[in-house]
Amino acid sequence: MKLIIKNVFILDPENNISSNGTVYIENGVFSAPFEPDSDTRIIDGSGLTAAPGLVDLHVHLRDPGQTQKEDILSGCRAAAAGGVTSLLAMPNTVPAVDSPETVSYILEKAKGADAHVYAVGAITKGLKSETPTDIEALYKAGISALSDDGYPVKNTAYMVDAMRTAARLGIPVTAHCEDPYLAGGKINEGEISEMLGVKGMPRAAEDAGTAREISLAAAYDLPVHICHVSTYTSADMIRDAKKRGVKVTAETAPHYLMLTEKELLRKDADYRMNPPLRTEKDRLAMIKALCDGTIDAIATDHAPHTPEEKSDFVSAPNGSVGMETSFAAAYTVLVDGGYLTEAQLIEKMSSNPAKILGIKAGTLSVGAPADIFLYAKEKWTVEPDRLHGKSRNTPFKGLTLSAKVKLTVCGGKIVYSEL
Image (tube, rainbow, N blue to C red; front, side):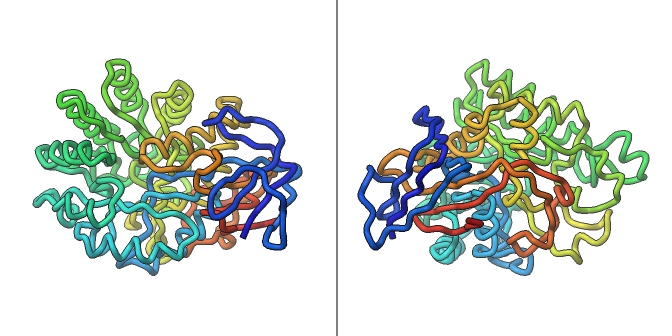
């Protein structure tokens, strides 16, 4: 099928395009203008903005092993509904992504999905920091990154070896920064944790992990990507490292931009994640870090759990779903708030993460994969029961957001439409 999207406002930061126009798609890629024929679908994009499909660097698809929470196909349906056309699937599945067979399973199943799935290989077997994986074998099977996300790599030597191998193979290492000996709490350590009588997780747990990874990147002149930054102190360390030329990139998540630990007063486990929601000072620091380039990307840390698992405030597992709301939430905070332009937001959610991952995405250039989404500046309220994934544990429930995804095209195929 050929596709023409006419009368649309085109926003392509990579090509410095910000104007009304027409988008042409043929054979799964963006093409030069062509005359429509009987095989061409024409979409009127009047009043809408077209931008490169979003690239989410941090997603938990729960497949294999925990498909009651999410699976590859359902997760990608949620992605499509949020304008996400490429996603990086973390390795804390059951079994973990520590063998070529598991990598092959994920990539094979993803062939029928509504988004491009890039698999992350585990750095250590079972994410236990005890035995390193065969990274070369995982790479040959098709991984696109390395991480033990969900857990820090306790053995520093294993982390350095992974960074060296990844740099040689041309793939990123994404680091879950947490000192396990300081961690273990349920929510941010501070006034709210004391008020609720719930064990807190100190910011030092994240900061110590961030400091270690930056130190390794600096000492060995190797790149590292810092996951889900949530503290102003970690942001300060990353900012300083970049000024010194350290090869570090970083991401934060929409919930750290919009919400704070005060949400925990609801005693609702949907607001519990790791790292936890922090203070207003931290929230504003994440925004500042995005604005000045300290933090390169916005990712979701999409982490589905069943309602039964999330029913108890203290014992529930950490994590929240986020792909379907990520663009709308970030737009509401950052664009409506006057912090970023729409083009800058697209950079943080599309072109920058595509560069970090090293994939062909984040652009509407002729010949590039036809991954694109259309959105309207339209207010809508997040209703969990209307989300497209299997799980409903969103921290944005009941909030009114100010941008709405209307159409998503992945590889030239319409995978989501409200038009």
